[in-house]
Length: 381
Image (cartoon, rainbow, N blue to C red; front, side, top):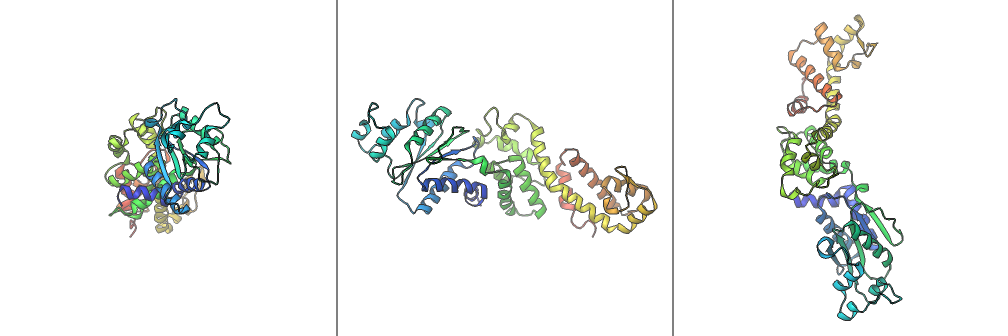
């Protein structure tokens, strides 16, 4: 797939992302105004709007509804009232546009409804400042909900904390729907299309990119498509992506926790910790599985030593070979020369080194990751 295909796949097939689509569509179909609380670094936001529009038309069978996208940052001044803006933009004629009087007993919302100003329209407002968002939320709350086609609203806001009347409005907070687990699932589909990678490599690649990029599926997808992770650390690749014009605004806020914000601040400790968490999830189990295979292969020799010798681990005598940690196994191997195959001895020392890295919250480097993922199968064959 290309980038456009992956963006549509994200919003239509991944559980958390599609839940956002479903919630917005269901609310609009129920004639309820929707506040969509989006993070500042939302991936593929234009594709989100497009998928919601398509899903809304499919669900309602309404092909005539017009979805009007309004960019408040460019089209609405800070002091403009929403009702006045809507009349100026959508009133069918001059008489309706200029006919409302503030001193009348009728609210501007009632006036707009009665004159069908927004008939067959969904007003989707993006780019709202906090001050503008408060005005639009109040306007939409008082606009009400009607079974009659008098217009609907979607407001994109960031960090709205205003209490909503659930009968007239609903809110959809993206970060309540989408997690890095969704990104990891998404990554697995992308990694599956990378030729020359084993299942273990694809699992590592998917997990590492999700852990580093958190909920930014777009950056994660780009990272997966660009990197040769057998030769390059994903952290190194971040610098190249962060410098691209398309991502110049990602993580721009001073308090941002976006992956690019950490990179630009050169907070490498945070990024390395994210990579370490992914390695603990994917590499640590492989190390343990290989440890058990080695011990099982040499169980007779190891059990004989443990029965004849007092081998202590964590202040207790070990009698079962399976309980041998890699450090203790290295000691037994050196002391009693029970494993003589030099390649396997080197492998055990290598596994011990990698496990120590992870156990002490350090990342394995590219060479070590390659050694774990490429050499693990068949080491005892």
